[in-house]
Length: 499
Image 1: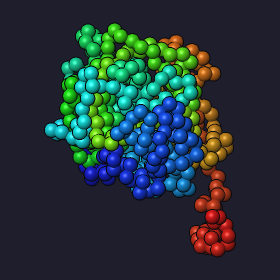
Image 2 (image 1 turned 180 degrees about the vertical axis):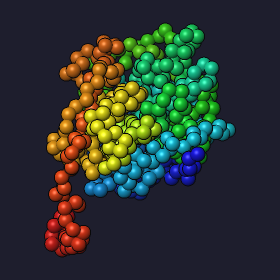
Image 3 (image 1 turned 135 degrees about the vertical axis):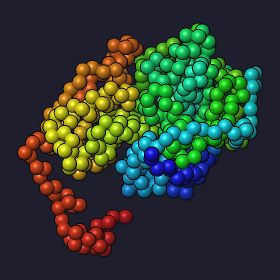
Image 4 (image 1 turned 30 degrees about the horizontal axis):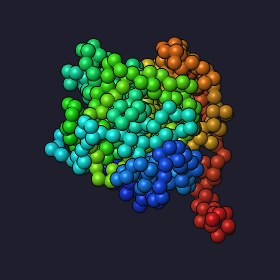
């Protein structure tokens, strides 16, 4: 038995409450002038990511009256000591939460029993409904995010809900959908992802797949959808376990699916077995426009749209780190890795996917007593690699770094220092299935599945037998407590604190 969670803070359970929490924390700015959906929305959001500026709430988007949009909601802050504030608020934690505390919050929920969602009669997302010919997706504030994108994107930060025909498994996922026209989008359904496996079951029955896209969902629902959970584990149950209460859902208008009742915008329809349209290129999480040419993807035809008054449309302008493809997906990947390795008996203190590596690195730290579990450092690294690279979470992870826990894996400067000074060999693995978005190593990512193979390795930063880690010379480790306290007490009056 595991302890039940106390109900999560409101900012994890409602997009509106999250927006309010960002505002209260000084991590949100309202942009009240008219902003064009054609590149301007994306350009502002991208600069927010790159400078650490607050999230931007757009109140007046060209051609989308009655709707608002928010960019960079879970970006990294430039405020010292609170770089992870927006991510923490999305998980209902204090804005001062550390990287380790974020990971442990997600891991703790993974260790609890899932709490299934509860269906309620109605919810805020039902305040307005378009059906059939009323549907016009171009009335939503859908952006062209990058110069070179194939079109306007319906979804970059919403939850796609699908269910197997026999109803045994409901999948929440995050996937790209690109606008085709007023009622259609091209949907990047990839066969190795969970949504692709659900689609395969509908295809075997010769039926189009019902789909509901929920945007502006409770932030914890987004993290659950982005977490690489095992197949046939409902993300909604994990979200409930994290929240400590069931996620409230409502039935859709036209498809046999449920979505979070507190969603801002819900788009319902079916993915065709036969009709295809081009999707991409798109500026993705590796920081490149990939693939270089558009690819045919199944068409998603929309039958209904429901939305809140003054609905908030969230989007992610993905690219070079860090944006939500790293702060949501990467963080969730690290948490799942910590859960998995602990479950397999590996003594893991914490884990982290450094944002700068664009989800390609996973750092795993172990305590001083790790030799009690596995005396040989290389063998421990091999065991870590075996577990990581055989799990779903390895889709983007090509490099695992194993080091002792005196190193903070979320501090990139410290991590690079440790890699240079402690690396004690590499354990290489045979090619694995993975993402192929590097234009240098995989010039033809469309060559599936060969073009989606990746080299995998574990970097061993652990000391060999007989070697004791030398004492560190940094301020926190080397100086007596009394000296440190005196230095800190006089730091500001000595003129060293800066502005």
